[in-house]
Length: 495
Ligand code: HEM
Image (cartoon, rainbow, N blue to C red; front, side, top):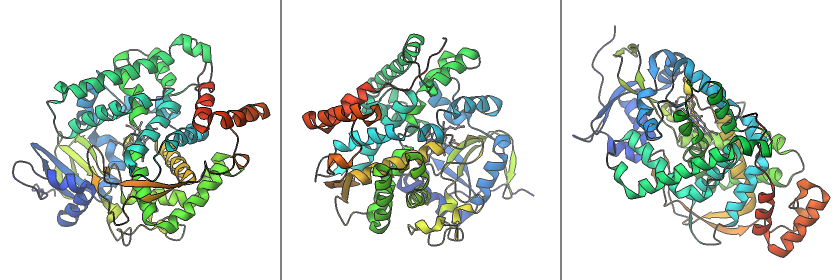
């Protein structure tokens, strides 16, 4: 028999749990779960949420998510900024499945694995510009790398020139989705950023227009797949809904992969023994002779370190939904229409599943312990029908980006006594106080003869040209020259 009184998580009159959530939303969810059990209420300013937490909530989301939850309401404001009625994140039911099918190839692990070289090139280019022996905020530097990688490789356009505007725009919108920001529309900075994002979108569409496609002829990317979906059924997927979907590659990694890489960098710098093992694997990936995709799969320490980072520092520790149908959960009745949060990362810190949860311990994931394999306790990529479509892509991207950094530079924490401080908005990430210094350069410092020469992919003549350019112009200009000679992957289309 369902009881009706749902306990309320701690908070202050008028503002509710805003401060606790701003401190560490994952920790606050775990504390509230331990105090109240798997169902509790929470207020954020004038909004009330019913929170479902613990392995039982994850199980419910995975098994009954399609039937009982709807994503539409939470994302509808975000969609409206782009002029869209729907997006993959906000769609439910059969139309959601159609969206996922259209996006699957371009966001897949296989697509990422085929582009490892491109990811490394982009990361190297950014790392080459990192200052020597001076403090540098790590999170924004990582954000530039990973956003450039996904934008360039998945949508065919580098967002480098738009980076600051993109971050400002997306953070403004995401924050407004969580806490209302009626003034946003009038902010001159936000309006400028919005105009730049429009320009980026125009560039993406221009690069994929019929004539461009026919000129270049190559493999299709995600934007081609979206345009195909639009062409096939413009009523189902109208032009008005295209922009938000086409901007996906510029947004997908911006806070998720970037935040995870920043947390991982912090964890590795705090655990030099693990860092050394991960670096050995990185050196194998970047200078070994085996194919990159094979080496990637063999990077066991890197993979475990990434998993442990995502357990301890989940960048998406909760999901927001609306109850589409009334249901019972843990003895409580949740009525249709209720605003619900599912705190998916709560089990990550429950010692019955992950002993000594505050300890960074990559051996949890070995075959003997396999703590992550217990049902519904490890969910860094969410659960249920909207589970991250880019999880394989993200895993490849994290491994390749971290490997390139560790291979190219020796880094130190700016202050050895530093302890991590985070921001929670729009997603959890190390804040600007997390600074690192380049102590020395490793990759670039190695003699040219030991490295794969620039232009090697064009055969021996390309390699000779690459070596000559390197000698005459230096690494940066040589890289630029070869990048501009390499067409973005594209295909010929009849359109
Ligand atoms: C560490 C990195 C990442 C994390 C932790 C993460 C996490 C998530 C989570 C939790 C969701 C589900 C949201 C919900 O249920 O409301 C999601 C959805 C999604 N993610 Fe990721 N993500 C990551 C990186 C990426 C990347 C790199 C891509 C693309 C290349 C991507 C593409 C997507 C897409 C398309 C969806 C929508 C799926 C749907 O609504 O059906 N993600 N992600």
